[in-house]
Image (cartoon, rainbow, N blue to C red):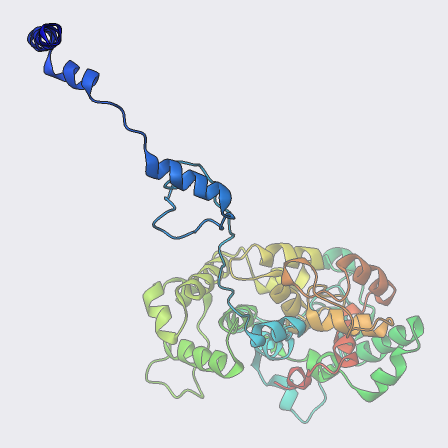
Length: 403
C-alpha cells in the first residue's frame, strides 16, 4: 500500500513539473494524438473496389484554367468555333457568268455628235473630195465656225506641202474600196457586208460636220449614264450659255466660254464635280491651242491618240471611238471593246459561250496581241472591220447609223 501511494505521488509530481516548464502549444502537440482519417481511407478503399465512373464535366468540378477540383491538371479539348456563313446572293453569282454589256452603241452616238445636219439632209449629193485612211476624213468645224477638210486644195498642192499622205480614194469610193479589201483578205466577210451597210463611211456619212470640242465634251457627259440622262445633261449644259434663247437655236458653247466658267456653275447642268473639271480642262486645252481642229485634221493616228489620251476624262476607248466615228479615220481597232473581242472570237472560230472571265473579273474573249495579229491583214480599213465584228455577234449598232 505504501509503495503504491509513493508511486502515485511521483506521477502527480512529474505532471506538475512538466506543466510548469513546457508551453501550452507543445503540451497539446505531445499529448494530442494524430487521429487517422478513417473516412478518407475508407473512401479510397471503396474507390478501389468499385468501377471508375467517368469524370463529370460540370462547371462545379472543372476550373477555367484546366485544373480539376481534386488538384489534377486535365487538358481541355480545343474546339474550332463555328463561324456563321453568309449565303451568297444568287443574283451576284448569276451575274458573274454573264459578260458585261459593251457601251458601244449609245456612247458612239454621243461621241459622233455632228455639228449640224449639213449635207446629210440635203437632197443634193455631197461633194466628192479626196480622202485617205490615216487622216481625218470628216469635215471639222472650228469654234469660229470655219469648216476644215484634209485635202481642201487638192490637186493644186502636193503632199509634201500639205504634210499629208497622198489620197487613195474619194468620199464616193472609199466604202466600196474598203469592203472589197476586207473580202479579198477573208471571203467570209462577204455575207455580213452584203447584209449590212455601214452608213458611217458612206459619202453622206463622211459629209457630217464635226465640232471636236463638242463631240469630246458630249462623250465625257455620256460616261456611265444612260442615253436619256446624257441628252438631258447636254441640253442643260448648252442652255447655261444661252439663257432666254429658244433651245432649238441655242449654240454649243465655245472652249473660251467654258474655260472662263467656274465649276459650281457647270455643275448646274447635272454634271458631277469630276466631269465638270474634265470638261473645263478640255476647254482650256482647246482655248490655249494645244488642241485644235487643224491639228486633229492633219495628225497621224498615233499623234491623235497621244494628244487626246493626255486629257483628263478621256480614256483609250473614248479616244478610239472618237477617232473612228467622229474623225472618220479608217484604220482604228479598239482591242479593249468587249463587242469587238466577242465578234472577232466568233469570227475566227472560237466558242464564245465557253470562254470565261480572266483574272480581276475582266471578260476577255481574245488577247490584245492576238486581235492585232489577226486584224493586221485588214489594214488600213480596220475601222470598218471593227464595225462588222460588232455585227458578227449581233451587237445593236443601229443607233450608230443615225444622227
